[in-house]
Length: 173
Image (cartoon, rainbow, N blue to C red):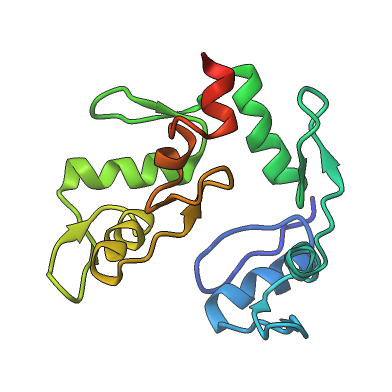
């Protein structure tokens, strides 16, 4: 019986030598594939190709339920959980479930009391980067969401959507 290739640094085994070589990049930090548009680097060629779709706007994966198109097959699979209701990631402390692992990891910060994102102007801390970005608008006065009906601006998208002259709001009535 053939022995599987094994990483001498962490002991992980692989089915091919090529897979082991790619894995070694985790330990060496090697990122040989670079985006010619923005300079971001990757350990795998397919990751670079998927990233480049951000620049080209290509969205080759389409949801058969709602028609939404996405840049990767993995993002399509995650998206489809909206339709199936699948929530495979479970918090071991409170039982709350999530459709994406990253959302569970963010949730776990609440149990651990972690608030790694902080405002450099007032010191307020947050569990999520998007909450910090939204908070910073209080200091900058930025109001990026504008009603195309009346011109009123908002700091949050959900405030625009529930605005009485917004088309989405009228559909809900």
